[in-house]
Length: 394
Image (cartoon, rainbow, N blue to C red; front, side):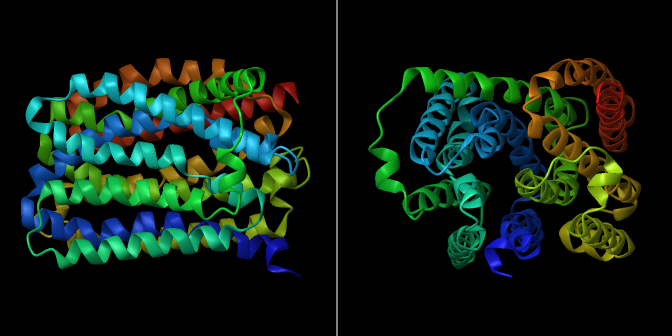
């Protein structure tokens, strides 16, 4: 079987980015905290809450929507319109968000915001469509490792340097993915087709609303923690989140690749596919190993913080990726596969409405562990509503 048709190898290639999103923080966070302190690291995590909101809105759901709309004869035009929408949204959001940032932190925030423009230029979805995930992973690996080398070559490590690494690495990855896609000239030479641009933007808006409603409560946690618990707890949460969020992100590319497979009629039918069972077994095994070696891992990442303070918060957080796996299974392979993403809005609106007061209450009274419990409760409500809606209506 050719590599391009082998879903297991494609999954390995496409998940290099997500593996790096787990590995790089494990490498960098101890260095940054040792040089700047947990409070300064907490400042980065606090602003990443705003950056995460900008990423969701500017992405506009298009990275997922495009995969169900793109075809060989329209790929350049669809990609051109996708980039145009995302860049315009990124510019508008920057103009709004910079007004919320204190004058002393404008340079820091601007450095981090490069990642939003990088995401707007990134055409990883085109590589998935072309089944060239291996080449995209090569681009990302090369870019990240070169910049990682530059980061360590600089003798003086400060928080702005770390912010620049976060922003510039994403920006260059996005830019190189476009330049080396093999379609660069065809993409940029397109003309704006307003009717198609409008259709794509509106369909993306539906999914963007879903993403914001489904993720807004969790990506806002650093903001809540900074307000109620201070930057030190925010920094500890940021280290924990890098791990559990990294595992959550691993599940998205796998489900996206299955968009090109047959229609699944139930969860049992979904798990009849050998690749699904294999992925899930490996996924659970790795989470169990991380939980088993938790003390070693977290002592390395946060050596200056007493692990007993956040041990149970970290262990509980490893439940979140399992819940998210099943939620993404429903969203991508049951709803989006059938172009029913508009049906998700009332579900996520309810989850969002319940989650905001839940998050605020638990974080206010219980701090760090309250934030983890809040995410778990929200994700379980979301999964229950998705499963219930699909079971009743289909």
